[in-house]
Amino acid sequence: MLYSSTTSGMVDVYGLERGLELMMDAGFPAIDLNLGDNNEYLFREDWRETADRIKTLADRRGVVFNQAHAPFGGGYAHYTEVLVPQMPRVFAFAGRVGIRQVVVHPLQRGRYYGHEQELFDMNMEFYRSLAPYAREAGVRIAIENMWQNHPVNGHIVDDVCADPHELAAYYDTLDDPDCFTVCLDLGHVALCGREPEDAVRVLGHDRLGALHIHDVDYVNDLRIFLIQNGVIKKNVFFTNLAPKSAYDYSTGSEDEGISYKYQGGKAQVTFRLTERELGYYDLVVVANEGAYKNRQTLNPNPVEPGQESYWDNEFKREEKADAALRKALREAQTLKDLKNIRIPVTRRFSDTHEGLRYNQSYPYTDAVCPMTAEYKDVDFTGGGTKDNPRVIQLDNPHGRTKGVELLRTFAKVELIYKKCVWLSWNEKGEEQLNWIGPWRFVHPYGPHICQMPKDVSLFPIQEYSSAQDTVVGFLGRESDEYVRPQERFVIGYDEILQKVLKEGVPIGGGYLLDYRMYFYIPEKLVPEGPVETVKPLYLWFIWYHYGDFRPWLDIAAGSHQLRAEEKCYFDHLNKNDKGEDYVKPIGSFSPSNKSVFRNRLYKITLTPKEVEPPAGNGAAFE
Image (cartoon, rainbow, N blue to C red; front, side, top):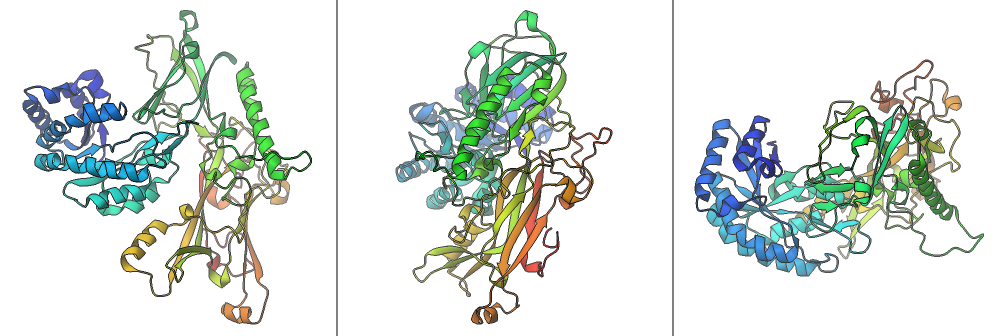
């Protein structure tokens, strides 16, 4: 893979040629030339000479310009009236430099929802009008996937080409691979609630010409504490951090001198210190304190007193937890106060599936998670101005990035059920998804999440978790036989549909596919000892099957299905890790490998076919 970085930012500060030299000095083998920022050189009489100079510079340094980005932003009127007329010169400049693809954003006008076909038709005309200029310059136009904010609640939602199937349809309808390709922005994919790897699979090798790769940390709010001698001296809060309607750029509130900017996939927060406040501070950061009400469990219908179900009570628990966490962070006076904060474990962090509980349009696989970071002796002795603030880049404790590295309070689980979903077509040609599998496997029950703590420390602390269980024994949301598998979790679903569209339904009538889910589980640190005593968190899988390897005989005889189950502890997943990044054994404190450590990604694969009942612990897992 040839990786590159955009010139946006460097050219703003240092100018075109000096900015390029600095990027080459940094060691980038390729450069994404942003032709929308400070691009007056495109329209001078000597634009050809400028293009030749930077091409010679790159050739001499062994660096290539692998793509360019056309001007964008400013709203529909500005884009169409001011920026689009620049495209012929943009293409000509890019072609002269040797660039073979230029990213051109589709037209975006107003709300996308309900206007999909209108925008599709508009963009087909738009891109076809640009094709002659691109072809003359010898470049391809790369179509990028977009997003927008909901006009009422401000949530990030789909815009043109956000759905990878629509992005594929744009490319296929234009039907001109010599003039068009696809640029998939993985950050935009994630912002719209999809998994980047699924979008890549939908588009496939032949359509994809470029990837925009940047991290999306799902931070909705941020609180910063400046601490001296254990006492909190400054407590500033940023909210509504998701980018607003202007593409890729937003500013937050400036309450008490606070400002927020999101640009180019990076977030920068700025706050004011008086001259008397300058000095060295311990820096503590908390993100997503509003996680309990991010896509909160909906409770649309009033419930009569005394008629509440336990999931109605869960809604109230979320509201209570949200208010308590915000109050604790707002009123904290010392570092000790922060370290004493515990947050309750509610269903939102551990739901495994869209089932019958709660509103089915809001799966908690989309929930955000509280995160924290801590830094010692940060230098705030110097300052800047509002227009030119001092920039502080932090060396994180593990040396992987520059900037604040946030630690998730919970762990994340990726769970794959092997060969348990049957994709078929009925006599009308309608696609159907059903639970099925070995021994007439009907559907997974659970997984149940057992022996979860009632609450968890917001910050990592060197203490064992409480052995007391949660009030609810099985906290994961269950699916039943009336809840069909969901397309978003079926591995290979989109590729199979495309294959069937081209080749028809296969002999045998369908495909047996895998099923993948994500969910959070809380940290639970336990000592060495019998599981009955220390009570580590575990996952409990249950399924039913016929006993004979020829299940049709059992079915014909009216036999009852047998029950098989698996208990999955985390010792075979932690291996020898033990969370050294943040857990430091002190005295008798030395968590066992059966602990669940925060900020981990645990990958579990369950293959019922390979288990001979009764199953032993771990036999079905990889």
